[in-house]
Length: 417
Image (cartoon, rainbow, N blue to C red):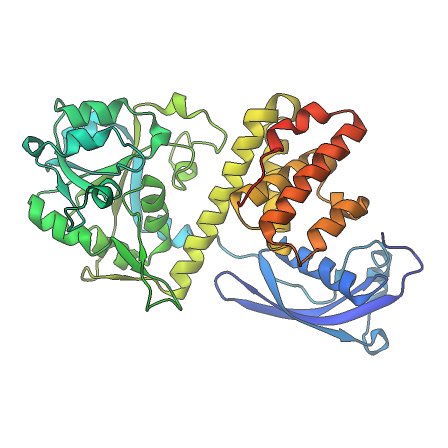
């Protein structure tokens, strides 16, 4: 805990956001030592979307500190002597302007100007394999392999009609199964297969020698892809497609931007049955090709993924504790936990979930007020999942001391995650 008698410390910092924009300036705070000062500065920058990249202690006597700032000094929070960052447009805003999207229902898929198709994911819908392997249905596996296990993990291209078994089963699925994407196209089956096979792998910045499997056939990934890729590159991906149709769920990043009645992250997926997002790019397209993700595109993908992780954590909190805490408290706890997760190298869904429970019960400054929790977060000898497990045990103990042990029970899931 910072004390009024702590010395005045000053530093010069640099920081970078996820779109590689750099800022820098000078900062001052009363703190017992520079490690604690540095931690407070890093956390304050994270709250504004920046990761600190440099921290250089300065002699406070060399700074000209505005007397008005002295009121804030000594309260345990850094005072930025230069504005750390201007407000900026959200990174996906440009992508949204390049998209034509709206809500529709299943009939729109079958009433369009072109035949209806789907790319089905058996990983999310294992029961579909029997239907998809029926050659009478005309389904094609995008992977060129006879191996049954690999085919079970591959996207399948299948023509749809309003009455065939695959279409009826697909329309009956819960929207949060994320079992595939639908689209309209005049192209033939083999041309579509050849086109989409280019996108089953992606090359990420700095990892060009080791491409990764890319799950663009997951509605959540396609929703992100439409916003993260440069508009002309997404239009190239969509070249043979007239319109995409994605089952609407709270996990689609486009759901919050729908005209009219947008979908909130805590909405019940069951209430979205039968609702779709109709999606198409606007503007020119570059020639389709293998997906080599640029640094800027990767940063946008990462930002959207982080938002979805925070929303997933908030949904978990709301399902187990929403009646007691309320939706806004669950969303705010998840948001604060994401910042703490980045500060303390605990970025996974399970690790952020443990931090969010601690924030929900004890506030975002729980580690400042309990040295046992602080020791867990600051122990860099332990792996992130080990610190997560220790934090869950601390949370159960702390709630027990407060007489609320029963509320900790949903959090007590440990292991590598």
